[in-house]
View (cartoon, rainbow, N blue to C red):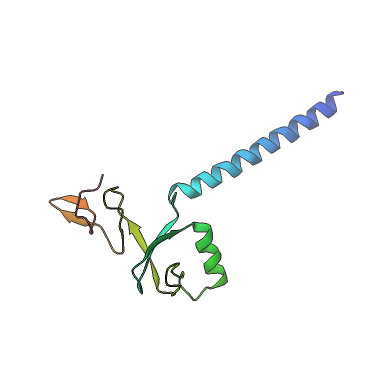
Length: 114
């Protein structure tokens, strides 16, 4: 094999490696903030659920004027929510955390957050 062919193969290998590393790091960076997807509460039936960011993006692209439907009652009355990070609670809520005795707490279980 001559030097020109070796150089071309080396360049192709480097470009492929950079492409795969870049692709992998983009996926990880995008999913770090929402590893479990996004959280929702249905205002109609109070069902709590989550959806992947890709599913939400697909829904919003196809139905720009409608909110995400509830998988339980299928009504389009869902709102974004936050999930309590405490395993004993894990409830979804809208709004903000609360402060109790100078500590940030879940508004549902009233326990301090880590």
